[in-house]
Amino acid sequence: MAHAQRISTGLLSARFGRAVTLADHEIALLHTIEMRPRGIFAPDSRLLAEGAEVRTASIIMSGWACYIRQLADGRRQVLGIVLPGDAIGLSRQVQLVASSTVLAITQVRVADASNLAGAWRDAARYPGLAAALDVVAAEDQHFLFGQITRLGRQTAYERLAHFFCELEYRLSSRGLSMNHELMMPMTQELIADVAGLSVVHVNRTLQQMRREGRIELTRSKLVILDLPALREAGEFHAPFMTRSSPVK
Amino acid sequence: MAHAQRISTGLLSARFGRAVTLADHEIALLHTIEMRPRGIFAPDSRLLAEGAEVRTASIIMSGWACYIRQLADGRRQVLGIVLPGDAIGLSRQVQLVASSTVLAITQVRVADASNLAGAWRDAARYPGLAAALDVVAAEDQHFLFGQITRLGRQTAYERLAHFFCELEYRLSSRGLSMNHELMMPMTQELIADVAGLSVVHVNRTLQQMRREGRIELTRSKLVILDLPALREAGEFHAPFMTRSSPVK
DNA sequence: CGTTAGGTTGAGCAATATCAAATTCGGTGG
DNA sequence: CCACCGAATTTGATATTGCTCAACCTAACG
Image (cartoon, rainbow over all chains, first blue to last red; front, side, top):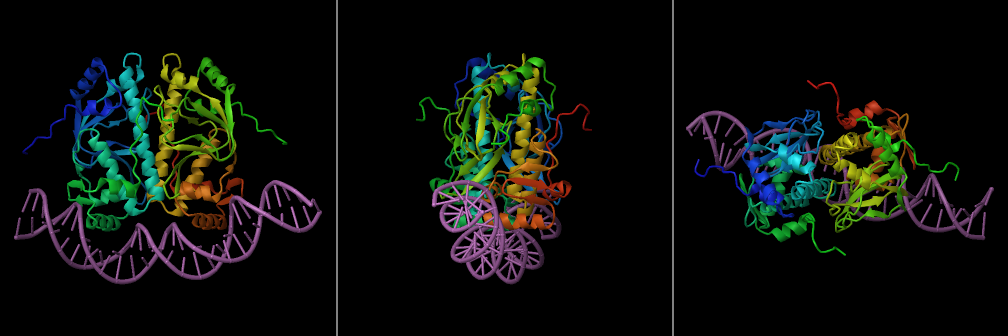
C-alpha cells in the first residue's frame, strides 16, 4: 500500500504532554512504550472481553476500537470510541475484570503500557505523567458523560452532531486530524450503535446534514464543513482543561 | 424527630471492605473519615458545579445526590445517582475540574475523605484500601456503562427495571436496604431525567409494573416484589467482583 | 463481472413525547 | 380537626420521532 500506516512519533506526547509539561525522563518512558508493540488485532476482533480479567495496560497506537455492550437479543450499544493514543485496561494496581468488551473497528496496533501504569502509581518519580494521566482520566469521563447526555436527552440530529464534534476534537488534539477532516472507518450501523438509533434513521439524518452543507461523509472520510454550526446544534463543549488562572 | 438520622457506623466498612479484607489501621482510617463531617447540604443544593475546580474528596454519609447535566433549553439528564458511601471528587493527585454538577436530592451529609485519596496514592502503606478503591472505581464504571446501555438500547420498561435493580443492588450491598425494600426519595420527574423519558411515560410505565405485581412504589419507598423478574426484564447484571477462583 | 456488505428509499407503525386538565397527597395555618 | 395550598401524580387526547420491514441501489473486492 502506498503510504504505510506509520506510527506517528508524537502521538503519545501529544496525548499526555498537552495539558502538562513532561520531564525528559517521562518523555523517554513514553518512547519506550512506542518501542514495545504488543500485537495487531484484526477488524472485528476482541481486544478484551466483558467479564475477562484485565492482565495488562495497553495503548492503541493506530486504528480504532470501541467499548461495546450487547443485550441478549442482539441489541448492541457502543459505550465509547477508542482512538489512537487511548489506553485500555489502565488502572492503578489491582487487576480487575473488564466491564465491557473492547472491539476492534479497524485493524488495531497495540503497545504495552504497563510501565505507564507504573508511572501513575509512582507519582514521586513521574509527577508530570501522573498528573497527565489524571487529566486524561478526567477527559475520558467528560466524554462518557457526554455520551450519556446525548443518549438520554438529545434528538437524533443533535446526537450525531455532538458525536462528530467529539471525534473531531479528540483526533485533532492528538494531531490526527486537520481542517476538520478525519478518517471515519465506521459503518452507519456502528454509528447507529453509538447514537442509540436505527441504521435507517442515521442514514436519513446524515443526509439532512449533507443537504444543509454541514458535513461531507463518505465511506472512509468525514469532513465537517461547518464546525461551529455542528457544535451549536449538538451543544458540544470541549472538556475543561486544567488552567493556571482561577475560574472565579 | 423520632429516630434521628444516625450515621450507620458500618457504612464505609461495608462499602470498602466488601471485596477486600482491610487491615486494622485501614479500618481506623475509615473511622477517622466518619469523624470528620464536612457539612450538610439542603435538598436541591449543589455539592459541586460543573466547571468548578474540585478541591477535596468527600464521601456521602447520608442522603442521596446525583450527577447531572443540563442542556441550554432546560432538558436535564441525570448521569448517575450518588448514594451514601459514594465518594465525590475522589481522584488521585491533581485537582481537576468537575465534569458535571452534583445535585443534592435529599438533605445530604458529607464527610471529608481527603485522607482516603491519600491512601489511594500510598498503596504501600494501605494496600487493602488502595485495592478496594480500585474495585469501587471499577464498580462505578460498570454502572456508568449500564446507564449508557439503558439509555441507548433499552425500552422504557427495561430502563426502569434496570434502574431499580441497580438501586437495590447498590443499597443492599451497603446494608442500606433489606428484603428488596428501599427508601426512594426521587420524584417521578427525577426518575424521568435518569431514564431519559418524559414524566408522563414514566408514570404510565410504573403503573404497568405495579399492575403486574412487580413493584410497590410510593412517594418515599420502593418495594421490589419480584426482583428476579425485574432483573430479567432489565437484563441487570451485578458488577463482577474480584474473585479468587479463575473464571475459565 | 459477480458477489456482497453497506447504503438508500418508501410505506406503515410503534413507542414515546407533548399538552392540558384533573386529582391526590403532604404539609400548614386557622 | 378542618380547609387550603402547592407539589407531585395521574389521566386523556393528540402529535411526533424514530423504528421496522422490505426492497432496491452502489461500490469495493476478489
